[in-house]
Amino acid sequence: MPTRSIKLLLIIPILVLFSGCAVTHAPSGWLSDSHELQYEAFGGWLQVHYSKNDSLKQSTMGELIALSSDSLYVLGRNENLHVIAVADVTHARLVEYKSHHGE
Amino acid sequence: MRRLGGVSVIIKLGVIAVIVLYVSFSCNNLKNINRRITPADSARTLDHDSPYLKAHMKNGRVYILKSWSVDEKDSLVNGKGFVYGINRNLLKEGEFSVGLDSVALFETNVLYQSGSVIAMAVITGASLALTAGCMANPKACFGSCPTFYVTDGKKTVLQAEGFSSSIAPSLEATDVDALYRAHPAGKTVKVEMRNEALETHMVRYVDLLAVPKSKNERVFKDMDGNYWRSNRILAPDTCTGPEGDILKKVISFDSKERYSLSDTTYLGTKEYIDLWFDHVPKGKTGLIVASRQTLLSTYLFYQTLAYMGDDIGTWLSALRFQKDYFKNGNLARILGKIDVLIQDNTGKWKKAGIAGEQGPLATDVFLVPLPSETKERPLQIRLRMTKGDWRIDYLALAALNGKVKPETIQPTVVMKQGKPDEHALRYLTDNSKKLIMLPGDDYILKYQLPDSASHYELFLQSHGYYLEWMRREWEHEKSYQKMVQLLFSPETMLKDLGPAYKKVESRMENEFWRSRYAHPFN
Image (cartoon, rainbow over all chains, first blue to last red; front, side, top):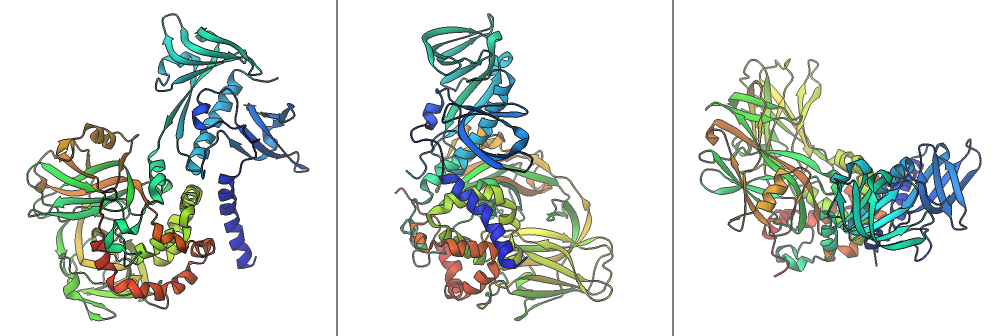
């Protein structure tokens, strides 16, 4: 593999980490700030990517409702509850509250 | 289904708690949250610092109570607040008594201002104008972690600098420094700990390591954390560097250091020092190396911060995931430490060990045990190091009398501004807490030895990390491209930065020490 490609492979995880800090896909006004989190009753905003049998890659997002040993429960924007097998999850990102970072 | 109760909720909230910490920390949130999940049968251990108590019920409801209390006798939780249904619709507001047997788990959340967040809040606000001495040379500002002062028997002198390479929370580490020149009288050892730079220090503990020794013995530590006793120390008979005879500079521990200037064309160029010992004692021996760094590494560190610019918080957050790379990555590997080489039977130079610690402030002393099969007489030892990166004060050969274990001693008194500081003492003796030191902070730590200090070799074991304040004057150098180049192609950067460093190198040491902290809030 060319050196340049190896370097790119090393750089990309860092870029992903950095972009991960700034971006949230939660609907505007949905996330609480850290003070409100102390007394509100809702779950965090979850974006989850999964694929069954390495075939079709899918993703969904919504409120994290629960996580059991084998299933992940996400309430989508359309109020549909998605139940995803933990074994199918490739990666997920949970944002629990609004940090106000950079504001 | 809107809400689940029982074990799944416990798992869910546990996962959330971990990720909340990640999100809040990595994005430098203004407040961190300490979330605790407590099973119903452990209600007596609930965190009463939490202003609200959430009781997640087995039936999916949740109570959110303010002014709450636990009635252990009747197995109830009482409080005023709200109860929400399984769809989180408000069912009722008022005063409630909730039976513990119907609760799946409790959740408490305590907001706190973390030490690192305090640092991040100020890290980009500092100006070089605060430290007049470094205005002329922005990369020569005094810095590098907590400094420790101990008497040498006549006056208080700088003896150690703590955890110099721990430049971010993820790099929090333990550092052991030899208090080789410390000569306190009696059983009490006083160590003055200062923050003299525009940095925030998070100090988890500072302990004294005391190794019993006889009158004619000295004790040395090696890079692997072993402590070796020696009652015979021999000076080299000959010592040469590229510039010629340097024996006078390394024969005694007297602050007369041997150092060189860097290579303009490539800051990673290596140089060699050769030393000979005509008379080598039988048995196990080791080379004593007393050294500190020049300001080359400090310059490169500040240059790295300048490339980070106002994204420094993001970069430091990324350190959490790439810490091995940052710690042992290309740049650290190229610059290296002081390699100690000896010749094998075929005359080929072989690495016996390494010495040296990061940091340009205090000279530290290390022992590099030599292989037992070293039988050549006279014994020739070669040191290999990056040119212009090290100041060597003392080199000697020690006959080793075996390993010994130190005794760890915590401070018994901590003083600030002449008065006992119980808060600081508590924080320095409880490993779950960290003492935060801002520029200008100065503590006296007192330790009680079982016997007179003259019966011990003393070392200082400090643990923590520090955050350099980002100077406003550096920000115009922000360059994502150069930062990536520094990380992944440091050889190129070490070539490119050579001429710029050369312009300031000869005066850096002087300007660095003159720019020691001036209070930023005056």
